[in-house]
Image 1 (cartoon, helix red, strand yellow):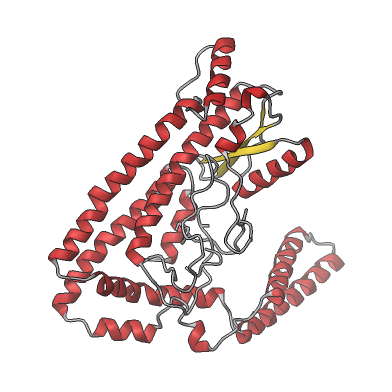
Image 2 (cartoon, rainbow, N blue to C red; image 1 turned 120 degrees about the vertical axis):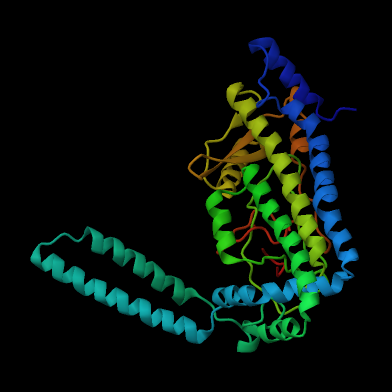
Length: 392
């Protein structure tokens, strides 16, 4: 039974009224192709990237545990530095507050002098507003609750531990590990390229990611957080939320690095193919307006804003927003758009629940988290993001 038969009927109605749909706006055909496209791309990743890596590991006589430990040790120093920056000590916070207060006082003094002499103050006002915001940010900041040793080992491995492991490698074994690590780096870069090609992340976001981490690997703690949703792919054909979340770090043991690397790619492919269908549905509704069936949203430059706006609209009008898709513009700016079914008529009564199933409750009776925001963004550790209750 075709659960998207309602979409098919809408498609037939559009064809009857205005002719054929274009290839980029036929959401029904997009849904039919979705599973095959996603499966083909996942299989290609397995056969051309993941399996050769595992074969090379076997030929090099390098076990999974040893290789993952090497990848972790290689990444630990840069990850620890970034995590320490995001988890400041009270001493660092106080220093930032003192510095910001000094800048504010100086700007206030300069502005007063400019005002007294009749000089322009627009640039000073702008600078003053910026420094006051900076001061407010640091006054609200919370210091890391732990020792300095813990704060500088939030990758799950201290720099000293990483250095000890690296120093203990023979030159011959290091060479074998480096060759394998280069294959991992290529896989990770291809995952970022996949996110960009699907329009899920912009070039600017990914360049910032690359500048932050040279040897990035996902740092998940599956044993410490067994109930965390590490690699969310969204419900139905909606890609709400961001692709990356801000790492906060943890001193818990990192687990299953290679498994999470594979899951990251699989989630990127799945969300990317879903985004392709969501964009088709958005264009289908936008090019064929019908106030009795659906409404499209104004384009937003942030996917969460789009989703929140439509959820609010649905509450007011008794309907339901079922799809959020996004794309990256030529200038690197991301846009998001949603399709909102205003009325659940007989012609589309089952369609909203098929396109976007209601979130299921988690164990313990807690609802599945909805939209989330993170202060500092790095590509989704979970998909590993958008990086959350899971300490990646």
